[in-house]
Length: 119
Image (cartoon, rainbow, N blue to C red; front, side, top):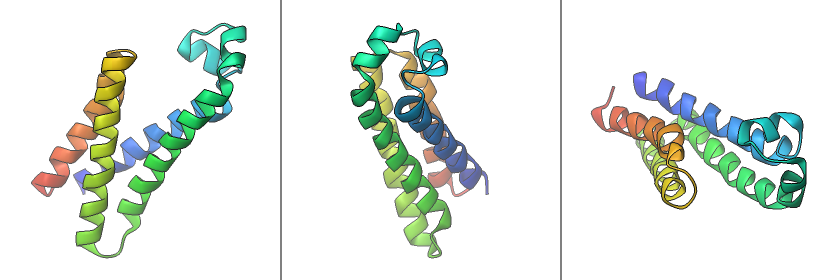
């Protein structure tokens, strides 16, 4: 039960990232969150939409893990997609900003620990 709640939180987080990057990137909310100028946001909007789409795929995979009827399949999906999120968080920390590790990677790591612990 704890693992499922944590997986759900990571999924919601990635749905939020999807919305920020694919929908709100060059709108006031997106510019405020990321601290971009209107010109920069406009010129990078297609890149952000692509990045947002990947976050949407991660959220979809985590939701699939929560909805899978077969427990072994659900566990395997959760491990795979949480691991993808963790790797993305680590890569983002190295290539963009360390904060990404804490915002994206840490929740995924905690959820992975819960999955492995069977809680």
